[in-house]
Length: 229
Ligand SMILES: *Cc1c(COP(=O)(O)O)cnc(C)c1O
Image 1 (spheres, rainbow, N blue to C red):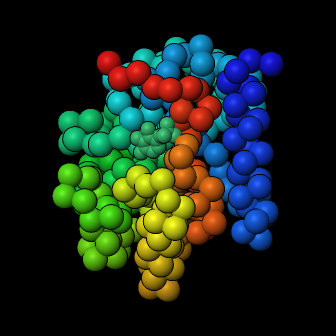
Image 2: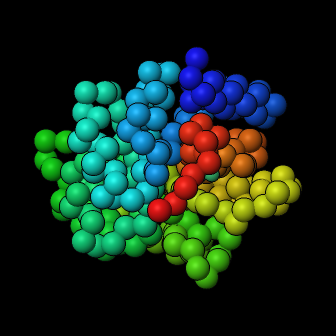
């Protein structure tokens, strides 16, 4: 077994354990393999080990991988910051986008989604820890943005995404994820039909699952440590 296949198996086992201790069904939780900065060979290995959903953060890097890996069945998710001039390529090449935090970006993705493709699946990125430096809509503005986005064609609003402030303490990790869960429940109570809470990364996905994550985004625990260039 390759290291990547071995790591994937370990991550899947840890997801199952976290689900079991939260009294949740393991099939409620989808694993997104975050392959940013990792090679096409690494993605092929993960695919061979049964992984289908992959996430990328840097558009140029992602477009190269998407085009070279067309022989594989991969569902591509975009999770990086989005500038206006990137929306056309994102709308044409991805199934999901998790990092929408402004109406203008959603409007462009809607207008630029090619008609032959299914609706682009969307999550709103929420700045749940209210960090000045972080992207994401503030929790108090999330409802207004969500209600505006559901009116746009060619998009399907599926849920919320967040990267809470990192912490080594499980209690602190869980508190950030619990705030996301409250916001998600509030938006659903307002009539939005959301089914996706995209939260939890390599160091905190167990805490995210305990608080209701339906999609965890895991990179380094699968592919090894990342070297940014
Ligand atoms: C890089 C990244 C991840 C994965 O982080 P790891 O710590 O490698 O698991 C998840 N979500 C977002 C938004 C990222 O940018």
